Length: 290
Length: 166
Image 1 (tube, rainbow over the protein chains, first blue to last red):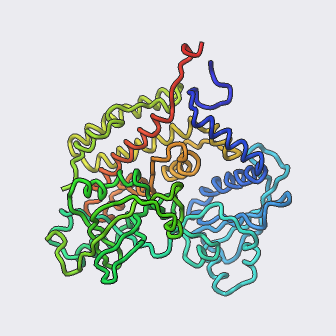
Image 2 (cartoon, rainbow over the protein chains, first blue to last red; image 1 turned 120 degrees about the vertical axis):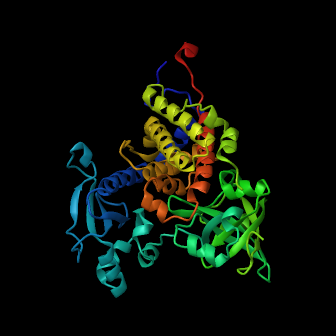
């Protein structure tokens, strides 16, 4: 019996149940959710609109009331942009060729220009901070002042970023050598410390990874995919090297129920269970493999 | 010395015996391509070809997300309000869509942004600017992540054939 709802031709109880839940939510906030998805479709289209520049930020501002929605778009590397473009208004149902409401009015400018306005405290940017709702951002293209001004938080306070270095890679090399080789590359993982001994010799913490541009803690199941976890389980030595030169040897992972840790991370674990790593500091002068 | 690719692959039951029932039956070509690529991936792993494993695993991951998202477009649309599948999206886009709209269905699966970074190691400039031995770790992580994803998706979907329903 073929399905008539357009879903895949499989029975999938989880998906069906979740769809019911989604329907309930949509009945409550349906109009805003639909507006949001229409706005996101515009943004998706605009990601490829300029061949030489990239969309860095899209903010829905001014609230969702009324028939005209307001959208700020900032592009990176937009040449000759010393001002915002005149707002462009069109129907959010543009894909169907409709000219009817709801409408969106897009104000576009360059990241660099926006940064100048922010730095000089120009009043022209004030309206963008009225009920701002960030629908899209690319943090690689935005500097801290813009991220902070729109309250875009991508990492928890105190996050250390670094890499896993296995024993073979660390062999006969000092921390300084390792840092000169690893330091220029993109960090693989992060650590938020949950405890540190007074002599700084030992600490515990939560391992983080970047997921959709945000640094989030991993569950124990998630950690199992990573080499450092499997090496440790197999009794193979390895190390965490962090920017700035901190160098630690993981000793063990222990999963704990700690509701208080939700204050240390950007996304709380649904069951307040967190895998905590126990670390021993390796001194910079120490040969890691020794 | 970290685990060999072959030994990891031997433990990855979903890579060795993939259940692709999460791909709709009318996507026969999708299944054919993924089945072939998975076979080539296990061969490359058996030969300890790290770079090949990284790139191929990245391509397979993209193929799985492409097929799964395309197959569940109506479901995403129901949750989101509207959704149109774009076949020319980037792996990062598919990852974002999966993490935002579908990940709750397979909560044990974690797809970090690093998988995109690893897949992009196909560009030599990207590898030059990465830490030494990046493919050693990346190949192992990609195998395990792919295995976890296939495992999660295979548990999610129970196929029901028309004959049984009649």
